[in-house]
Each structure stands twice: as structure tokens, then as C-alpha cells.
Image (cartoon, rainbow, N blue to C red; front, side, top):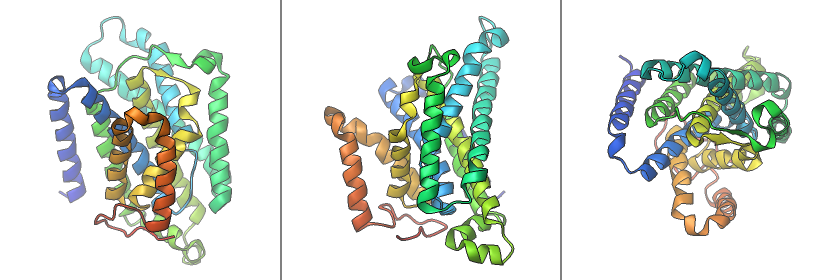
Length: 314
């Protein structure tokens, strides 16, 4: 069996063991571990676009919000009719998986709609388009009364467990790793290195960028669904520009195109607000200073762990 598949099975087994012993874990630490898993999904999925394909997206929180709202709507509006008052654990898990997939596919569709016209652009222009998309999605949800409007959705069923989070984090890492290191995935790296040269040898750079964008959006939607069923309430303001920047910081801090570094950065930047909780109001200032110092001293990323591909410099 190939090593990535074996690693995935081991990760799923570990997720099961952690879930089985979750009752013995302090609820606070369990919540932090859950947030770490969600942020790993977001950072690794964005790394496929920003790191491996060489684009720059600032709208990842928009895709996250699509997944969060759609999966939460499925749970709130269809759950009682489908599951009844006392659902079996298996039925509840299957329903939750279906709700997550609905949110992920809706986010992937949004990624396709945004990606087809915008991914013909490059650099700053693409960043501006994705930023605008994230803000448009936020305003749209803010004005849909059926989804709670500006007050958001409340009373979302608490379906998210540590098993689901760790399992999807492992699946995201596995998917991105296998995709990038496959024969087809070498096209992502070629587009990153030189779009003109990639097109000259018969590749379609736009197609590769759209595929990366759609896969990235799908997992962002899954992360949004997990987040909504974990927090039990979501509002449009929770998926604003600041959230997108937080995810981009994780990718840059870990080193774009460096999978182990991005995972470690997601862990560190999730723990950092908890460590700095007494001065939480200065968190974004610390993030900004961190980015400035990083770009000056370590433009290739702070965490240079051994990986399959060396992340690009400035």
C-alpha cells in the first residue's frame, strides 16, 4: 500500500482513538484542538491555490461561509423532518456527512463561478477579485432573511465532533498531497513556475488554476460546515476580510507550497490567541507585525520543514 494511503488510515485510526477518549479530555483543550483541525483544513486547502499553483486568493473566508450557511441550513430545516426526535447515532452521522458535502459542493460551485472569469487574471488583479467575492458573499448572506440576515443562524445542531474534524483534516492533507504529487498535479507546479512555458508544452494554465480553485473551495466549505456545527451560531461578520487574512497568514507563515510548514503554522496561529488571551485586542496588531517581520527576514516562510517541494522565494 502506498505510504500516503497508509498515513491516511493511521490518521483516521488516531482520530477514532482521540474521539473515543474525548470524555477524558478537558473541554477547553478539546475545543482548541477542534479549532486547530478546522484551521488546518482551511490553510492546507488555500495552500493548493496560493502555494502550489502560484495564485493569490483573498476570498477563502467567502467559500467557508458558503459551506457554513448551506450545511447549517440543511441541518436546521431538513434535520427534524429527516431524523425525527430521537435519531440513531449512525443516522445522525450520515445526515451530518451529507450536510457537510452539500456545503462543500456549494462552495466548490461558488469557486467555479468565481474561478472561470477571474483566474485568467494574475497577481494583484486576482487578489482584488477574490477579495470582492468574499465581501459580496458576506453582504448577500447578511440580506437573506431566511438565513437569519445580519443576526445569522442560531440553534445549529452540535454535530461536529473531534473525530469529524481530525478525519477531514487528514483527508484534506491526503488529497492535496496526492493531487500535487500525481502526474496530473505536476501541472499545478508548472503553472506556478511559468505559465507561458506551461502553455508552450501543451498545458492549459487556466484549467489547472480552476481545478485548484474548486478543490480548495470545496474543503473550505467543509471547514465552514464543521465550524458552524461547532460554534452552533454563525453570522456574516464572522467570515469577513479579517478571517481571510488569518488564513493567508497561516499559509505565508508556514511557507507557501510547504505542506508540513503550513500545518504547523495553522497550529501555532490557533494557539497564539489563546496564549495572548489577556491582550486579545492586540491580536491583529501582532499578526500584522508578524507578517512585516516575516517578509523582511524570512520571505520563504518561517517553518522550513522537509517537504516534497521547496517553497518559492519572493
